[in-house]
Image (cartoon, rainbow, N blue to C red):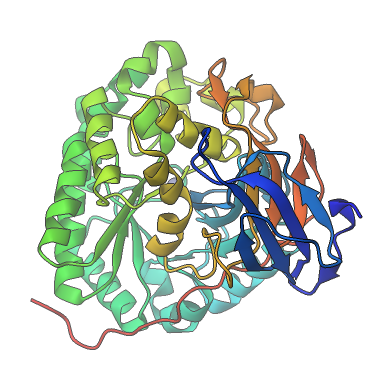
Length: 461
Ligand SMILES: [Zn+2]
């Protein structure tokens, strides 16, 4: 029986994957087999015998859990011409990603329960991977936070403006938003750049090019904004996760806050680890993302943050734009780059370079990523977890060609890079969703499960 004929149950299929090798790869890696029933893992062992379910022969490839990308923008509904869920979720599978957390930063925003419900229904009809949709935390959504809290893993707040979203600089407004999120019992995920310093940077570097993007949107902008967010989290009791840390000072602030007992999490993106401001002459506006990509020393500090657990996850901040828009002059080019299609090869590259241990790299895109946003049943090869699996060959190398990636933007900041570890088979809840370069599913993604809201009664400090 072939895996393609996987018998379907509501929510997932039955499948036995056998003959795989455990992670990390190497001559000592033991054999590994996983049995999935009705979409959930029921057995994990070296060897397992078939019990009538479809069998996928792994032929010695390395088996890891499906990846969780904690931060993508698929711009759908509203800007489908830039990506859309159909292409975006195809790119996710290509990168080994079986679950995404999506941030809508173009209208219609999720500022009411009705808007969020409509978005979830829209996405469910289109996504090939499981998904969480973040609700927007804005003055306009204040009245609806309690109603939205059960439907979203977190509220997204832009302290600094970025492509498509204005930032908030008024401290009283921010305090109101933090307090309301705390009452609703949902964590805030924050884009931390200080709006006042961003405006000042734009003014100070008039006529800047992408080579000065990290000066226009400075280290200090991120650091001051994280200070603000930490202080508001401390005094209101709101849970906080700082998205896309880009600066050494950002890592240091989160580390210090955690040491002081303030429950704060954070994540970064592959481009803050593998690229730097020194790539501007080569990449032009392809390097233009927000927060800005800073220096090699900042990348070093973020890697140290991943190693000691200060930075819990690597999410792509996949933010596609058409090539012609990126080729406009610096000040008119939109910020953001695609990379969900490459999440596992880029993460594996961090191991190949000896920058992260295999264990740390994998956790940052699976178990630790899921935990950072309290997502249930994702990112682990354990009974009870979803049967989301990736098979890859650690040594098979391919050259990145943006035009060949599923994402609609058809360009990549990693063009021409030789990467290894491209996912060869991706299983989503027991169903083969991608194999040998081909998509095997249309839609079928389900909303992610996450911890229920936990209202906080008393503010601290
Ligand atoms: Zn983003």
